[in-house]
Image: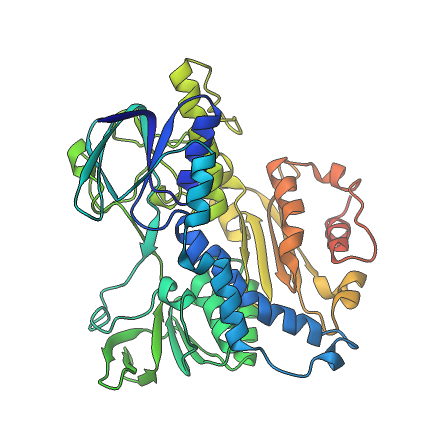
Length: 471
């Protein structure tokens, strides 16, 4: 039996960061991982997907600037794009991540981790051997999530692509059908249409419908300009994989659609099916509900959950934010130090509820933080919405010919602070952090007048929004 202060199940970005904070705090920690150290983000999500998208974005940017446009003489080199993608996924080899764990003083146990009793984790290796780990203080579940495959007739038997297979594809299919209209569906429709696929997108609930309404409208319009068939309201009723390897979909209205590959991107499901939740009175396969310090509700005080698995925010950067908080709070509790779990406290993940930044790397890019107008109203805030055309800034004309974009500021009228901010346009991702700081810092609008944007930049939109709001 091997004993540590903390045992972390899952060595993705969340598990790595949580263990690192624990060790930096003076305790010992071990991590358990059944797949690749570095997790979904490193090999099948954040990094390789953005590598797939970046080449097309760079080519578009060049074509939007006279002088550079004339220098572009060809189309994307698909093989080169895929090679670059492979490099960002480290060719699906985790030696570098394993080396980092060693340098950080965090032992790695490869295998399937399962809670066997209070503070006890059993690790079953690939050879069937079992190692028992005991935690003095806490067990952190950081097992993440997997793609949800819905109960559509014939879908599972057809072996569709999920985000993993799509991101790791070795070749670009001639025809790609996509079920879904969210972030993964929109980004992969963008990437594969630019790589040469004929893409059909079945967006039952609309495109990026959880964002401000103009977001989905702009992205759907752009996708259609690329040749993507965006089918709002369309829904697959049954799916069949044919003998020749192609896929046939029958829509609920009876229409038939044929494709070479099918991507299902409608949501996520927690990786909690077989981690021993039943041994401690919790439901296998369920999301783990936590308090603001990531301690699991309905369980004993030694169990924590961070990242996708707690369903607070399914984004890598928020999971790492939670990991820092949970690692620090476990150290504080173990040492009998004060716990700062109040609003915006060191040990509380307050931003999960009020200031989540997100970028969708479509064409155009979407950058948002905080609440949408509808979300703010649902939260009971008295708001004022201020919109501005990004193309009306001088910086946009310098940035690209024919620049199209939009900005929205949602103001909490009672406190005179920004509750939400959304940008749509080329390369707006790098403008987002200023809005995140304004939302998190609850900077009064009167003070923001003194944050003077440089001229000529697209960031001048901050001044224009304030002018539209009025002093």
